[in-house]
Structure formats: structure tokens, C-alpha cells
Image 1 (spheres, rainbow, N blue to C red):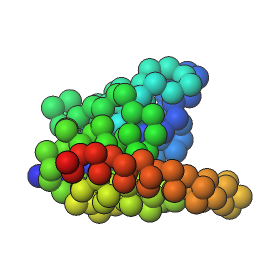
Image 2 (image 1 turned 30 degrees about the vertical axis):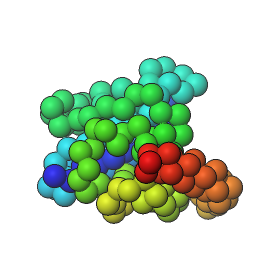
Image 3 (image 1 turned 180 degrees about the horizontal axis):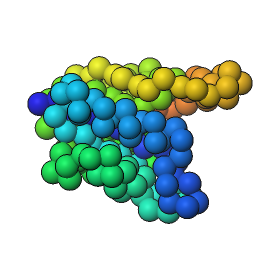
Image 4 (image 1 turned 90 degrees about the vertical axis):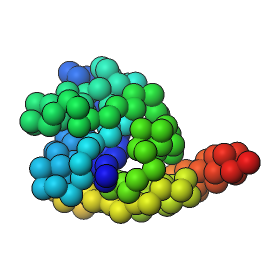
Length: 160
């Protein structure tokens, strides 16, 4: 059974998902409706505002018509590595479709692969201005070594 793994993102001060997070959530719901995935796992712990990201995503998915029984929730992670690592027990070892922003997916796929997941990825199209997209890409370049190091350490600890 294929599961969509929606990676966490910011929650706004009013408790709603940021535009980027909303796009990820809607994209995951579309994958479920199309039959590409059978369930959705949402991730993300407490951010700067509101409730944990995963809880906000779960509530938004339900508002979009997703049945609660089709939603798995990982509400404690704080970063990309933790989103994936802490969701592992919920995923059942089956195939996973990572859902995130397109600029974020290469790093997320690399982490997921190191952690032993069989993954594909899918991300919504962005309408962000060029400058904002470039800033996000540069952030990914800087964050990738840290995420990879965390994943490699985790994989070595858990291989024993």
C-alpha cells in the first residue's frame, strides 16, 4: 500500500497552514483522490505558532474531504530528517511518495533513501517569485549536508 508522506511546513499565527504548506496538503489530497496513494502521513511538530504542523495538516485534509481513517499523524518532528525518521514506524515499510515543495524534494529523497525507504516524490507547482525560489534553493544547498549527516548517523545506529 503506497502512502503519501507530507513533510511539515510553517503554520501561520492564526493557526492555518502557510501557503507553501497548504499546497503540500492539497497535493497530498489530490494524490489520494487519484488513487496514486492509499493513505496519507502528515508530519511536523510544534513550530513558532499554533498547534503542531501535523495536526494542522490533518485537520486541513479532513476539511478537503479525506477520511480520518486514511490519515496517519507524526506530530513531534522538527526538521526534514525527523519528519522522515519519526514517520518510519507509521509507514509499514511499503512504498512512499514524498510530498513537499519541488525545491525541497531532492534533499528529502536523499534522506529517505539513506533511511531505507523505497520512495518516489511529487510536489505541487510553485507560483513563488524567482527571487524567493532561488532563496529556497540556496537554503536547500546549505541544509543538505546536515540532513545527510543526521540520516547516515541514524542508519548506522539502527543497522546494528
